[in-house]
Image 1 (cartoon, rainbow, N blue to C red):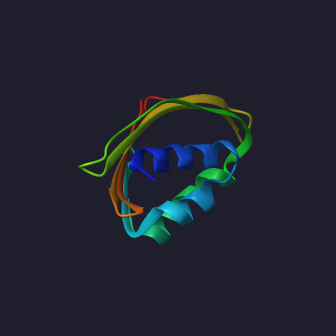
Image 2: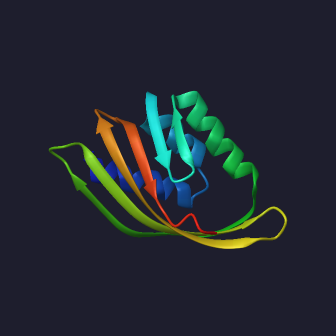
Length: 119
């Protein structure tokens, strides 16, 4: 699989409700994840953050994959997506983001999320 295909597969898994399974398959033990709200390092810490995110969702309405691309020679991929969820407590949000992934072999070693943190 190319890095672009792997990135697409991650988001297809997310659409099917398999976030943690995709995380376990594609993320390296030494992964670093960075977003406007902070940075997490190591697979266990990053997975715990994803579990916490999921535990705050009351209803998952949709996930659109808007654009996917890669630089195969550099081991980099990106995914632009839009997610529509209702959080516990009733707040519904449409979240747009871009994730840029740096791969080593079959695993992501760094992922940076770009989104508007104003909400």
